[in-house]
Image (cartoon, rainbow, N blue to C red; front, side, top):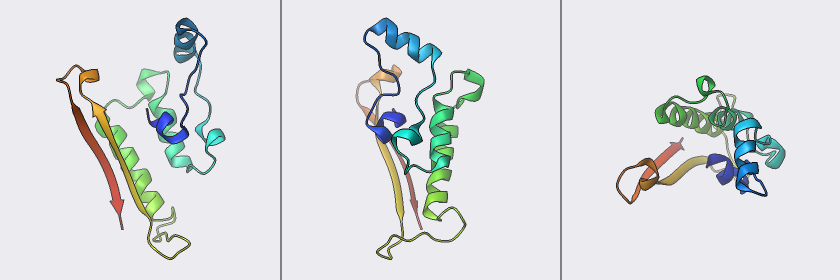
Length: 121
């Protein structure tokens, strides 16, 4: 879902369900930075890990995933070199990521659960 949120395209596409399933199981997603060169490498690395074909290299929990997303947000807000990053207008950068996760998809009751990651400096 993060790949699609960042690129506005699905990581895998196919003419049929069987072709789509084959690609999901056997091919790597296109490099997100080809589609969005403005994305920092640290965020691209998080996306690659989340989409890894090998279970042992994927995130083992949502908490690990969220921690890495928070770290990317902090790095970005600090400009990557430990200094506070500023926009061209002189205002400090604010990073926010929020998503409504359908609970029904996870086997829980209907509705949504909000996930929010923010970094304000």
